[in-house]
Image (cartoon, rainbow, N blue to C red):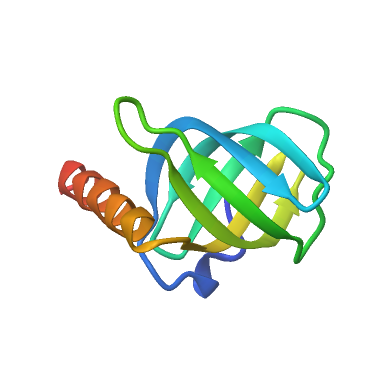
Amino acid sequence: MPDSHHDERSAPRFRYRCNATLSAADTSCPAHLLNISQSGALVAILEENRFAMDDRVELTIEQDGGEDITLLGSIAHVKKHYIGLKCDPVSDEDREQLALALDFLAAEHR
């Protein structure tokens, strides 16, 4: 999916497919993570879109055989069922898990 927000990215983005949950104050829905970076992610939600631009959200990334990673952030853009997020890890442990996942993905793309 072409992304008109490419110039706003501050970190390399990697394809990474896995299940996730996207939650806001009054809603939560299953999602599929499509790509991720140190500063954001692109997800496809699997239900009707109930999220709006600038909503504060929590993205929980389910890792096979590992601890879930939780990111807090906001909706950067919405296009049909695709939602772009600007986000940060919640804890130092989440930051470390995300860094390890991104290092692994970077090595795969070399």
